[in-house]
Amino acid sequence: MKKPSAPQESNSAEPRLYRVVATRIQELIRDESIQAGERLPAERDLAAKLSVSRASLREALIVLELSGIVEVRGGSGVYVSEQATAQADVPEVGPGPFEVLAARRMIESEVAALAAKMATDSAIDAILTAVLEMEHHHEDRASNEQADRNFHLAIARATGNTALVGVVDYLWNQRGSLWHKLKEHFQTEELRVTTLTDHRKILEAIASHDVAGARQAMRAHLERVTRTFSRG
Image (cartoon, rainbow, N blue to C red):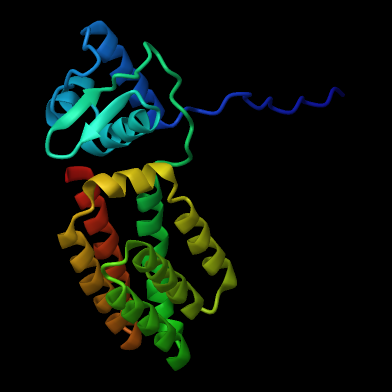
């Protein structure tokens, strides 16, 4: 009897959405003869024209900026770069920021809930230390971000599950060039201050062993970040 053949794997992965949208923006620039130095339509109009969300559009514009195809000028708009080529290749730069945030909302909300159930006094102290570090280094962006990472990893460690620590660490490390450029353009002082308040609420829920409260506080925090980066 002839053995069934194994299914063949595709040699090409499905392109990430931001690359698809970025290619469509390049086509629009070409088709509408938008010249170097000229402004693209406003984000809201461009999203409607391309039938995509503001979040997907923003990721695509950022990757085009990283490619030198457009320039994002805060408070002014998006312009075709003077150095732009007709159809430059859009690079693959890993998962988009909103893809990562969606995964974090799903996973870290449950991690916070488990931490609230399992956290020891020493684990809670470690989370508090990270919060205090963030507050102390509020004006130092690099140190503040490191303290932010320590906060989320301390919560994962509070679960007592090293696999979850690895997952949270992996998700944090997906914050690549797209994430940092998006943050550079759209993170506000209001979000930075609110993040500290959010972290305090998450800490309080975990310290009180409030499982539902910790889950909701983490979800609300990550939803707030997503709204800020997608709407500006």
